[in-house]
Every structure is written in structure tokens, then in C-alpha cells.
Length: 284
Ligand code: PDD
Image (cartoon, rainbow, N blue to C red; front, side, top):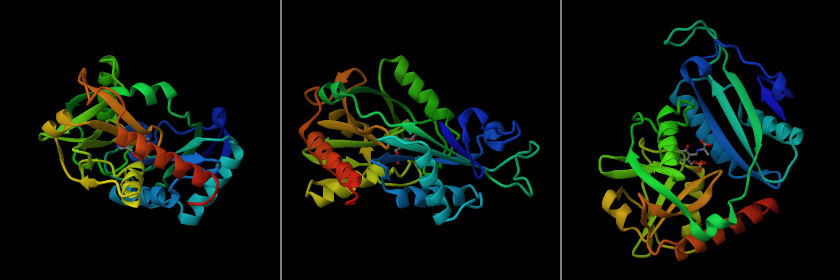
């Protein structure tokens, strides 16, 4: 695997970062995960918009401009050929003697790698997955795609230990999102997803699903999802760049709807797969 590190393309085994890097010492950095289908990045400009918003929010000067990001990603993908892939891209505040306050003249550390993107398991499409609810113990700026993910990691691990695939996080009586995914529910045939605010990550997959619903005349509302809405939902889905649209068929051990992936999910999934195919063909 060839990775990108601070302007160089080199084998992963040769890439080295200082132990004083603030990403390592403080989790002081931001990241992106961009899916790539047939050599084309899905919603690249939207991913770069979000990266720039995250950098601005944590006050790291953008180390590359738009053209620089695009060029780097193109070259990195050329170094790592394959069909469906995802790019992981991370920017930290850089290397400095340890002190919480920002260091004076430090340039950011920029790292990127390419991973295989495994398509959703066909069995999952038949059966869906289990999720468990738990309190959202994260900070109050979940809109920033920060590498500081301890609360998300603990939530996901707790879900795995409960035999589930994902944790659905609850804050103030409302469901915010998954540990690493956005949340959709279907009630009375209407899709509902929580509105974008500082309590959740503005997912690129989420926005695409909202757009596909509008394009195809499928009713969708951006509105809070209460615990009662979640428990009464006919369908629950989780979305992310790596999970696409994942149907949740058991919540806290109780079947969701009839316990099988629902018809609204099947319809949306079809539109999502069509979008991916259009991307592969260079039509979107
Ligand atoms: N995570 N919410 C959280 C907390 C996430 O970590 C993610 C994605 C999402 C979905 O965002 P998007 O549709 O843009 O992937 C929502 C990535 C995939 C990760 O951490 O690996």
C-alpha cells in the first residue's frame, strides 16, 4: 500500500510520524473518509467542503488548496489501483513540544491512505443488523469530523459486546446519530432524519439520501427523532460512506417493524445503487 504523508507518496511501512505529533498526543486533528467507485470519488467537493469546515472550526490553516487536495487524491488513487475503495485523509496540527495551547510555527501533518471498500454483505440486505441505544457521551461539537473519537469508540465497542453492529446515541430524549453513521427512521411511510446541528456529523451519505428522496418524490422530513419515534419506527436505517444505507431490524433486542428490511429502504437502496453506477460511468 502506498500512502501519502506530507507531500510524499511512499510505502506504508516507510511512512513515519513523530511521537510528538499532536494527533498522537492530543487527538488534535480532523479527518475525512471518501468513497471511490470505479476510480471516481463520491461527492468529492462536498467532502472537501466539510474538511475545510472542520479545519476552520479547529483553527488549523488548510495545508492544501482545492486543486492541491484533488491532485493529491488523484495521484494516491493511481498508486493504489482497484475497483471500489475509500480514501482516509487526516490533518493534525503538527509536531511540537507538548503543550495544550497551539504551538507557534508548526505546519500540519497531512496523511492519506486508500482502503478496499467492501460491498455490503448480501445477507445483511436480507436480514438487516442489530443496533442498541445508549447515552451520547460526546462533546457538544459533533459537527466537526475530529479524530478525537474515544466516546464513539467506546459506544461502538459496547454495541459489539452486546451482539449489535452499531450504537444509536441518545441525548436529551432524542436520537442524534450512530457511533459512526447517521440515522433515518420511517414512520407512517415518511422518512425522518434529525436536522443538521452541532449534535451530529453532517454526513455526505445522509445528504445524498435526502437529495435522492426529493428527486424521486419519496416523503422525507428533517426533524428531531424522539425515543418514542425510534421505538415506534417501521424502519430504521444507518448511513455512512462505508456502510451505505444499512437497515436496522432489531433495536435493543426488539424487532423493528416486522423484523426485516422494509420497503422504503429497498426503494432508497435501489436509487443509491443507481447513483453509484452513474458515478462509475461518469454521469454524475
Ligand atoms: N464515519 N456520523 C459519524 C459520527 C460518523 O463518524 C460518520 C462517518 C457519519 C457518516 O458520514 P458520511 O456519510 O459522510 O460517511 C456520521 C466514517 C465513515 C468513519 O469514521 O470511518
